[in-house]
Amino acid sequence: MTTQPLRAGHHMPALFPSGVVADRFQIVRVLGIGGTGTVFEAVDATNGQSVALKAIPRDERMQRRARREMRVAAALDHPAIVRLIDSVDDADYIYVIFELVRGDDLAHVFQEGLLDDAATLRAVAAVCDALAHAHARGVVHRDIKPGNVLVRDDGVLKLTDFGIALVSDPDATVDDRLLGTLSYMAPEQALGRDVDGAADIFSAALMLYEALAGANPFRARTPRELAERHAATALTLSAERPDLPSVVLRHIDRALLRDPRRRPTAAELRDALLHGARAIERGMVEDEPEPALIGEQTGPGLAARAAGAARRAIPSRRPRLHLVTSTSGPGTAERIGAALPRAAARGRGRVAPAALAGISATLGLGALPFYPTVSIPVLALTVAAVSLWRPLAGLIATALLILPLAGNLALGLVPVVAGAAAIWVIAVARSPGRGFLPALAPVFALAALWPVYLVTCASAPRAHIRFVTGAAGPLAIALVCGLAGIVSPLAGSVPAQGLAGRLAGSESIAQVADDLVAAVGTGVVVQSLGWGLLALAGLPLTRLTGARLRWFGAVWLGAGHATTVLGPALAGHAPAPQGLTAVAVLAAAILIGLRSVAPRPVDRTGAAPDATS
Image (tube, rainbow, N blue to C red; front, top):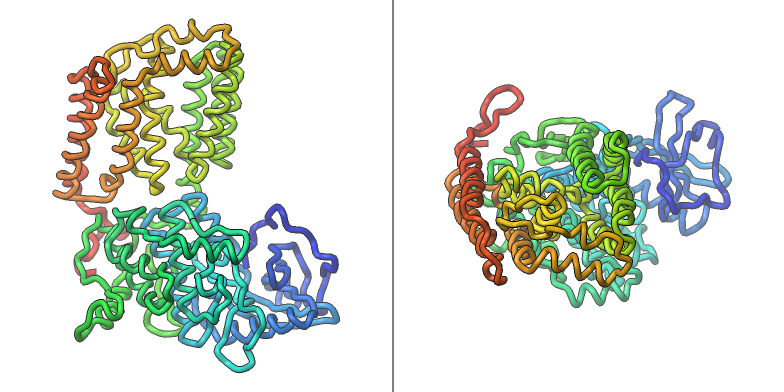
């Protein structure tokens, strides 16, 4: 039960409780409206406690669901499941009272990028632990999705909304098999068939796939459309994120199979995700046996090893959430990962994009004469503040501020810039903070550190973000150097020299587009494609350690040097200056070498992580 404001698009029902209800609860505000009722924040007059009050209309079908939700909630006792407190009723509503969870939901956390890969695995592992508890008691949730996983302000995860859960007793028979959120439904659920815990496993795995791969290909408007997508699409996380630990890829790929009998159990998936999270935190060093799927590996002690792996969870090196799981019995909580408030995570996740937005605005607004010089810092700070609030809004604001500059130079340039900006915003909408990265490309290039720019692009978890930000680098360098009239460090010349003069006063969109293409040249385009591929393949640079990092870094830097120097030559242009490119590669090699031999971080007590943990 989240205390976030009611999201746009919801409407008040015709009959809406207010004031004091059931002679006991003072309604404070609406928290949200779901398929089974409206949720309020309320104060219990008997003890002054704030609670989440779910008001369910006295309709026969709704009453049946209310009784089922209360029966399910009463049967579950797990620290990662929202706790049922009581239920009351009046002439119009049945009120189900739950603990109040102040915070947000996992959908928002994923969208804002507040979790790294290891923390994302731990978050879904906590959900799987809650599901293991529910499945052991004959309860199938049937609506697992990020919006039904709440994140308390102190980072504790809580699974909620068992309103359509299926319980294995005779009184649970209902006529609503096809319930749940379409985008996360298992194939058998979309077809209206009987489901068991395997349907929840599919939904949890799809939730993780979307967070790590950046897309949910099963978004559909109707059950028929969803069933067709299931039939035509075989998801595999291995294809999208081969850099993740093999145990995670194997279990998630199995969990996303259409045949529910071949999916892992909730406990198996939990153990695999915890194992993968620890491997990432150790720099992809897997120094304990991998948990295996039942039927994949046999032998004495397998189950004990898997359970032991879950109990030996070490604190995350980059923790951003409390994750609460139960691995030793019902009602027993084990904290997975060291604790930092979610607000701090939100701040860390937005300060960098905000600073980048301010730098981008300063460089962009100062590139061409239009705004008074004294106003540029004010505008840049405004953009940074907007980005601190919402990175996507800051990106759009920067684009809007640049349009008058384009119009002042050439009216025909406005639609070209507007179109390019719109395409760029759409391309990076899932990670808007990284949309400002190309503004840094000229800075890194002029400082002979362009590989650092590519590594920064390669750190993005989403493949398409890595590619587009990497590919935008040479284009940004060529345009900035051309407009400034200085030699490009990637070309040994001024690719866009005289561009401003050729564009000045032009009202033809076609002529402007031709001038831009001619000014950039095919050599820069070839470099852009090469940089995009380098950024796409560079994610292991942020994951590997030791000798593996040095070997991979050497191969990657060699490919980068060849692409940058020979790219223009392949397009019939003069090759880039090898001296400056070699200096950049050498500097990056030193940085990679230093990182590969850096000692492991110590925990907050100052002790090195236990090698046996």
